[in-house]
Image 1 (cartoon, rainbow, N blue to C red):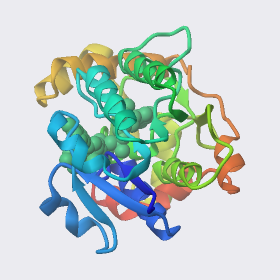
Image 2 (cartoon, rainbow, N blue to C red):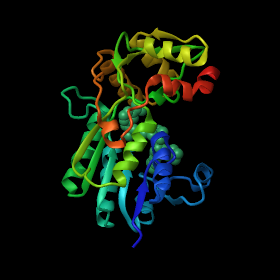
Image 3 (cartoon, rainbow, N blue to C red):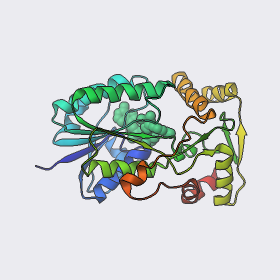
Image 4 (cartoon, rainbow, N blue to C red):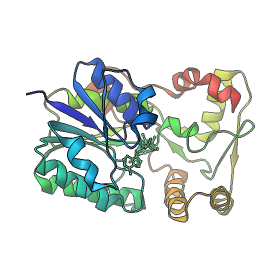
Length: 287
Ligand SMILES: NC(=O)c1ccc[n+]([C@@H]2O[C@H](COP(=O)([O-])OP(=O)(O)OC[C@H]3O[C@@H](n4cnc5c(N)ncnc54)[C@H](OP(=O)(O)O)[C@@H]3O)[C@@H](O)[C@H]2O)c1
């Protein structure tokens, strides 16, 4: 019997690389996507697509047929807990054996934050399901400087004060996921995935300047202004509040620790910010 690995969130920053790496390793991979026509150009022809939407339970059966393992990337939606848990239940009923879940750093720390509580509730549900699991808990992505808070006219606007974080490159997160999904010994394990150093936003601006030859600067914005800016840009209120919680945690440098988990699993040290900046220099020069 062919053992298929289903990747959810397959068109996103992490999932796209997970899908491609699994295929490169020779695994039978199926990308679960909401819109096949839109997703198809992102993948080689040997990667199978299945229509899958967390918000449409009718899509679960088709995506799960013959699947033994899942890369589970919960969608950022206010009902993440219910949607993801319902999918885990369906996966168990369909005969899935193992789930590798993308979670987030700090979900079991004493500092509570909304998205962390949601991930923690999903983790708990998976534990209780009896399925074999591995939880990947990455720190803030380096790629957020491309997706969530790209520089505008050479300035990075964030309410982080002098806070620092050990940003991680999503390519490393994807490598860990692909390795964990294709090897043994990771059951009931939790990996906290960080970059190699804690950096403040002024450090990030300096590194981007070095990599691009263009001057970047950090503008430490007051929290109220950051909130208003996101609301004015049309970000939903619940998401603004969730992001502001994360900014507040980072302002306090709560997630500055560096772990060895990426190197332990992949055998290679985590990508540093300078390499990330060089690899994406064209995008930053144009931003
Ligand atoms: N950003 C960070 O710093 C950070 C740090 C730690 C953990 N995380 C966690 O990482 C995850 C986000 O990963 P990412 O940045 O790779 O995501 P992303 O780039 O935002 O992509 C989201 C993916 O989820 C898919 N998706 C959205 N809604 C869906 C639905 N209803 N049904 C099926 N698929 C759906 C999207 O598909 P479409 O192409 O159809 O939209 C896309 O493939 C979240 O769980 C977040 O909490 C993020």
